[in-house]
Amino acid sequence: MLEFVTKILWNMAEDPVNVNEYQELARQALPKMYYDFYAGGAEDQYTLKENVEAFRRIMFRPRVLIDVSKISLSTTILGYNVSAPIMIAPTSMHKLAHPEGEVATARAAAACNVIMIVSYSSMCTVEEVASSCDAIRFFQIYVYKRRDITAQLVRRAERSGYKAIVLTVDVPRLGKREADIKNKMIQPQLKNFEGLLPTQVVSDEGSNFKAYADLTLDASLSWKDIGWLRSITKLPILIKGVLTHEDAIKAVEAGAAGIVVSNHGARQLDHTPATISVLEEVVHAVKGKVPVFVDGGVRRGTDIFKALALGAQAVLIGRPVVYGLAAKGETGVRRVTEMLKDELELTMALSGCPTIKDITRGHVITDRERLQSSL
Image (cartoon, rainbow, N blue to C red; front, side, top):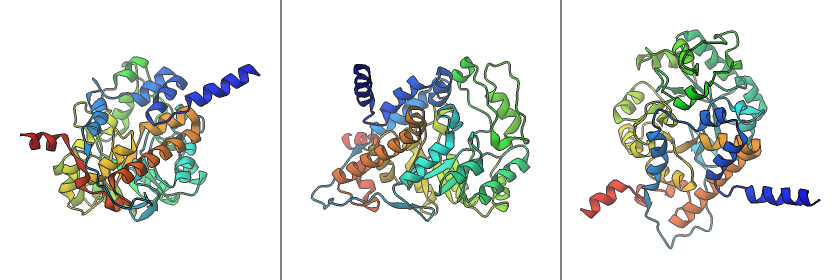
């Protein structure tokens, strides 16, 4: 009996009170190889740290004496009503974190009424995720050397009711992820590609991820190929991996329905800028022609508010979702999402913003602006 009560008290003490605490629970729950895979970045991991730190350098300019007795987080993404400006980012291989994998993540997203972007490297099939629950979801892809593989995945997503395609464009080659090399992390077989891609790729580099990417992904992909992708689907296409105003303009010209400002969770080119620090550059470039989203480093509801103030229509949440899944399965993903929503609601109330539309550029000040004002 004493052992039972002690266990209950221990579990209560271990209940996270913020999203960051789920990372430690995930570290305890996962084999080191899998935790390092999810948590790690490229090379020296400068950008990995900077993605988080850059949010902390943005300060609030709250407004007072505004009626915030009722707060609404609801908004629309590509015309779809959602409970909050949050999407679940496409992250790989959820069954390494929890036996139910992407199905558990999808159910949590549906329960929270937020959009999940299902990764091409899901360990559950496109169809399994779609049939797990009734919800709005998007599908993330790469363009492969064999274009018929990309076309098949897009058609399967369309048939399964996915509402948009998210094309990741920042992986002509795989970034150097040193933890995966040291851990000899091996690409597992993905059910979405059974019969389409080789199941085993041999590499002498420890991990075979790079060899697998070199074998399958099309490094010749260019802006003209966006037209090909648009020709094979009626779904809107979001381009993920844009960091400059030049590429933002090209994305609009190519017919993108939206842009995701992303450095791939700092897993590709180290020493790229934090995504929040270049968000405004992209927003100004597109001039309202398409919605802009952002991922990377979002750990608090305050971070979401800052991104919205700088022009994002919504944020994508990646690692925290996986940490929640690893720690507590579907319940963990739901709790991570609800924590972020609760913190965003509180930030809105304390900043004088009853609705998402009330959040403006005037509600935040960047470190650059503070420096200029002090000169």
